[in-house]
Length: 122
Image (cartoon, rainbow, N blue to C red; front, side, top):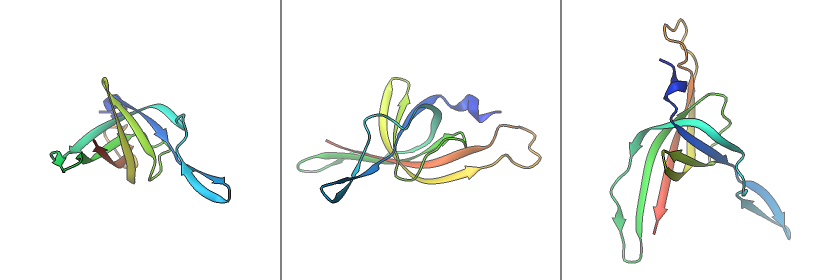
């Protein structure tokens, strides 16, 4: 088994940058991604039911995403993940790197796990 064969999704990575405008520092998201079409896979999904309020509806969820260890993702990055024809926006959380197990019978198990969350309000 090799995890690279398992990456069926693609993600674009956006990182906020600091800009000083009239002496005030603003955090802005660039128009173009820092990295594009990175192979990945969302493999754990915890999406609670929709929450209805008087003025809006809200859906939030916590998932995990797996990608290659060489991918440059930082906590707080915005990840646009394409799964088939669906595109969803996530935020990167805690990141855990897994190295190749010593004496591994099956090579290709090194990967990076990223806790991701999404929140949609309508």
